[in-house]
Length: 83
Image (cartoon, rainbow, N blue to C red):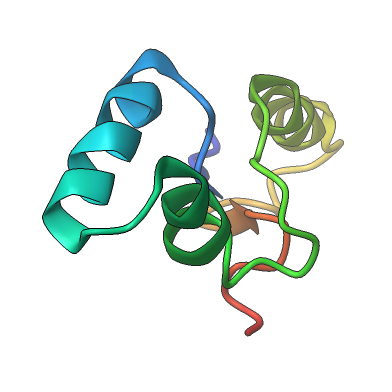
């Protein structure tokens, strides 16, 4: 049995879309600045993680041919933890 975890960066979902104007009001900045500076400012490429990105990581974990890859976490965040 294997158990792994996927740690995505910001994924553009309905929840994130609701947070953008809320953060803009709270921080007194534009919605574009929230996206560029707050949500994606610490990524390498300024991109949202996609649902497809997360699915590809899940497929990678599921397709790994042995139980040697278990208890792992994989961050799929466009380098968010690198900066």
